[in-house]
Every structure is written in structure tokens, then in C-alpha cells.
Amino acid sequence: MKIGITGATGFIGARIIELAQQKGHTLVGFTRNTSRPVPGCIETRKFSYDEKVNVDGCEAIIHLAGEPVFGLWTKEKRRRISESRILGTRRIMEAIAACPAPPHTLISGSAVGYYGDTGENEVDEDSPPGTGFLADVVQSWEHEALQQPLSSARANQPLPTLANPLRVVTLRTSIVLGRHGALQTMVPIFRAGLGGPLGSGRQWMSWIHIDDEASLALFALENTHITGPLNAAAHHPCRNTDFTKSLACAVHRPAFFRAPAFLLKTVLGDFSHELLDSKRVLPRRALAAGFKYRFPSLDAALADLLS
Image (cartoon, rainbow, N blue to C red):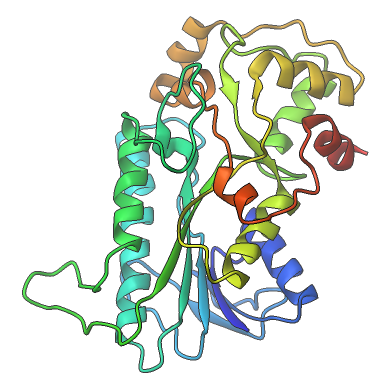
């Protein structure tokens, strides 16, 4: 299959490309900077929120591009987080609708932030959305991907309806553990013996190994009965305290330096919610569809990544 992938040079995109190659797929990499070829892709094309996107020849699209959420949520940062997801997805949908031979499948990035703070409650793909900045962004993000028939953002300028409905899967991703990403930030702190729980430590964390994240994206692509939201999370979420103990054990260091909630809120502002809110998310649709996790337990995932 010829797959177009946005965010192709990112942490997740690069791993999907590697696994897709192993499965015999060919890849077209979409990136903002086309001066350098995307490793593993037969072609590099421009992806921009301000320009038309060319998806001609692609049988499917995996759309991952978006501003990272990590960092202080200034007014400008919030704008970039929101616009990169909403406008970026809108450009992809416009390109698909305008394509003479459009792709049959879109795997669109999403996030477990959809559910907001879940507290002690377990949630799955059928659970209602939560509230808060990221929950609102994710709902709007998915809304753009799920429009059928497709239409442009400009009133009175409808795009053509596809002859065959586009199959859309919104991949609601949790914290992805890999040698890059969030774990890359945490490991040096823990190896220095400065790690510890965040706030009370009782908040639930949903996570997934990078290999399972990439495999699940391709699993959703290759299994045509899968549509709609799909939680990309391991089926054993853990409390922050337990995550802290497992990571400390994996790097053979103590982890006594608790970060008080008030300090995180003072330093990080609204972004602190991403560290202190509970996300107890279960991947019921992935399991029901027969997806097999390579790393269902946190200890196994960390052992693989930190060996």
C-alpha cells in the first residue's frame, strides 16, 4: 500500500515508517521542510497549514502533524496547539476531497486528552468527552477528521463529495514511551536521583510503548472494519506513584523528590493539568479487534527501552 504520512520526521512518525517498510508498504513523507528527504520514504512532499496539500497517488493517509503540547501554555502556544491540529486536519481533508483518486483511509492523530480528567473512573472509546483546553481542542480536531461529506472552511465553497465514503480512525494517543519523547526528559532526572511522584501521585497515567503505538496505527490501517476512535494506550494504566517506582527501579535509583502540586501549578500554569489530572483510559476497541500488545506491562516496556 502507498501510505502518505504527515509528521513523518517526528518521534512517532519515524517509527511508523520503519514498521511500514518492514511490512512492504511504500511511504510518502509530508513535512514542512522538503529540502531533506524523509528517511524510509520514496518521496517527500510539502505539508503546510497555509498551502494546498498534494495527496495524489496515496492509498491511505496517516496524519500526525501537530504542535507539541509540552511547555508553558502561553496564549501563543495555545494558538499553535489548536491551529496546528484543526487547520492541519482541515487541509488534509480538503486535499482528499479534491483528489481525483482519493485515499480510502485516514488514520488521524488524536489524544486521550479527549476525556479530560477521568478521576478514578475507567473510560473507553464510548465514554463522553471531558472539559478543559485540551479536551476542547481534541474534540474540534476529531470533528475536522470526521466530516462526511467534506467541505472547506470557507462558506459557500463546498468541496466535492467523495464517491466512496472515507474510512476514518482517530487514534487517541496516550503518553508514548520511547527513547525520545517524554521518557527522554524523565530519564536523566531519575538517573540523577531527583525523580519522584507528581503532586499526590494518585492520579492515573495512561501510556503506550512506541512500538505498540506504531503497530496499532498500522493495524488500524490494515483492518478495514475498524472505524472511529481507537485508544492508543496499554491496557494497564498505572498511578503516577507506581510509574515513578517502576522508572526508578529501571534506572536503579531512589525517587524521593516529590513535586508538590502547588509548585507545578505555579511554575507550569495550565500545563500542570497534564501532569496532575487522571487519565484512566482503556483500549477496549483495540483489544476487541484482536490487537496484540508486545509490551502490555510497564515494567516490560521500561526494561526494553532502558536496557
